[in-house]
Length: 146
Image (cartoon, rainbow, N blue to C red; front, side, top):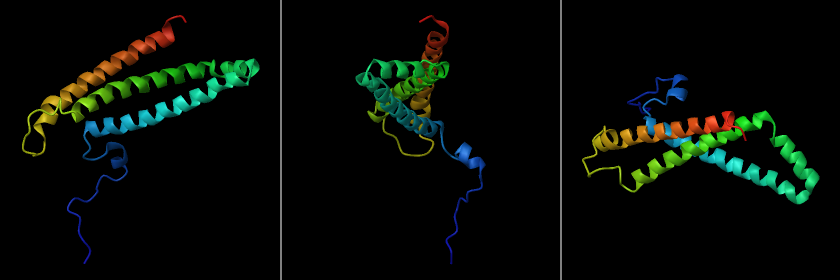
């Protein structure tokens, strides 16, 4: 006799985007991992481009002409956005892991009060701070003369 699921997946394709019972913290954790991989990719590409200097002045000039295109300005800003999010969310995760934001021990009954009363407000503060830094960085990237 096949085992019957108590909670069948009735979300369908919508569940791919909504995540079902995932909380906002789970989305931030996933985005944290993705931005980390993106920053690592940028770092490796940066090493490749700057290593062109060792191949001579002509190679360096060609590489700098390529990355001087306007599309790369948008790309640089996206790297900055990823960095800002990764930094602020990483600080939040470190404080949670160190127990600073977990509060006193409590009976593990969902929904966890320390998550709702302490961690979630701090998460909102950190994401607002990251958004402010992203906006200020965008202003500097696109509107201030270099």
